[in-house]
Length: 286
Image (cartoon, rainbow, N blue to C red):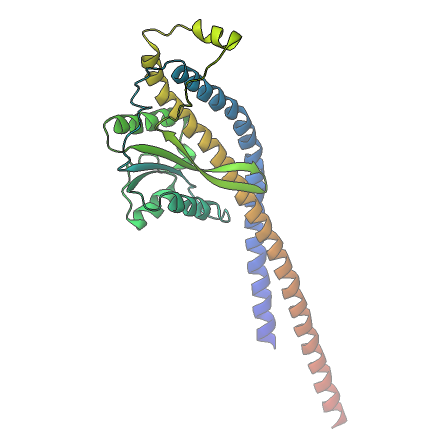
């Protein structure tokens, strides 16, 4: 009985140590999440405006021949996949990998991974990697996003792949994060709009130098960099939200486990005391 009580006591101490770690990780994630949410909110309008600008340029020219718009047979695809550098974030990493696997089904594709977990996963799966230069998601900066955009844009123009996707996790709320995949190239332009009145007049007043197609080709890499940066902001916030939720659940589970172990310990202790009293009484009667 004494050995059993000692084992329970050691178990309680072990769970208490784990609970201190999970609680600390929850607090750190909560602190970082506030800043990450602000960055997401600040970055979203940038893509919306940039995307609309590209639509306006492409839609204002009926003879638009940019390589970024031209449709071609899709022989190979490239997926830019954003995951985390660490685990302990619930299903954050697993969910984005499942999303990419579903979207890439039946395709001949390569992957440009962002984040240590993405590199490890696709290496293990035997998928060709475009580069491992962005293996630490925490260190990816705005300039890195432009460098990444330059790499994939050049390879797209060279015909190394025929479409580009970005896989990331969309930050819905602190309790909800949704994996998503968006196609960034070839750029999907709507049919030529038959704008009238003020809208048509405003477009006719725009002058692009040297021409609209050259301006469009120069903006597209900026657009891809912006999409990747925005996806990074969404993913970082999602990872922190998922980690906060996971660590909160782990802390609560540890607390429940400690309560149960204390109950077992007290029962074992009471049983030991009862046994000792019984033995004393029996000895006295003899």
